Length: 68
Ligand SMILES: [Zn+2]
Image: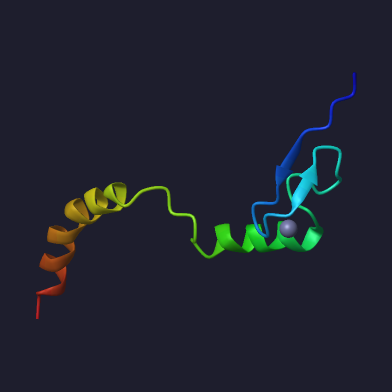
């Protein structure tokens, strides 16, 4: 039984078959758009991690910059 799973393209929501060459995207174009989103930081995992990093880095950085 060859069952075809259908999902929506993450970019344009167009139905895509799991047998599609560009699955889960409907076209190479949508795949490229998705890659661009990752590259530009559109998909940020979480901000709390960044806050912790800044808390550690902040003080030491400020000290070295105040040496004038
Ligand atoms: Zn698409």
